[in-house]
Image (cartoon, rainbow, N blue to C red):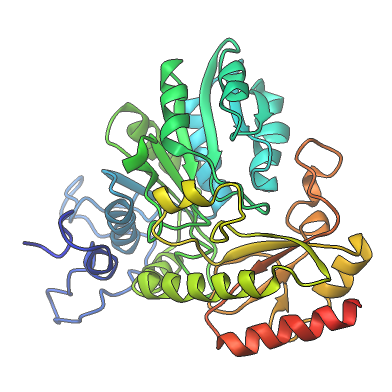
Length: 388
């Protein structure tokens, strides 16, 4: 049995799928094909199907094979960023006049892309609470609804959406069901197995895992949409470059063990912060008090490394807290081995202020890294002391 076979364990696939050793030298790690073009054996005589770096590159192929194996899909496509991946998918699946239903707390960049970029080309959308299945059913009833966009856990309020139930509702009206699996990663959750049609990722985050690469991915079944998406990747050209693809593959090899540590640290921190006088609420699906806890326990193997907190002192306290940590670094993004802290209202979600997706001003988001737990807890506690 090949290590890349679907029957192999997740950690085995993460290390071996698409990563056969170099047949020329025996190198265990496949080389980076840092080239823009490929010599042909006569006109049209392509070696392995490669002719030009935009249409294909062996390093990108290795990542795309790996992505499909991780999510249990047939086809993986790698892009220059998560938003480039989302944009290619939207252009492949929609035409002017189509309607999209999405969660009312999706990533701000996703909302901006659908609302301000594709909205100018005639794409309509409705944002709803995906936990209210009746509201979702009503939104899906709008004429020409072609796509249901799910993000679970959501960013930054960690809402958990029932992928299987939502997929059933979406499919009942013929809508494509898309899940942004960036926060969980395929190490913790595989939406295609829950009924989704397409999975998208910012590979910048947990898949790359080391805050040194920007990338995106789409994974889906073979078929007409996959061919349209591959055409968009080729024709529009927002591809993952060889070095970025290689770095992402390198990161994925440790994804399974990293997600275990991220989850363990986040769980312990969530429990420690719950009940702290400066904290009004902790948003983490691993807490039994979280309204999505039981659902998350069913559709995720662990609860992940992301959590958010609401400060009792409001926006001023949230500002002070976010700017007072030492181990947690104040920065955009998430999913790296190092811990980060952010203020969504003015950072990751600034583009949705004044809309239904606006993030409360007392929310601070934590991307919990894999450092020593005692150091992380001590850092947060000293920062909370400064809040007063």
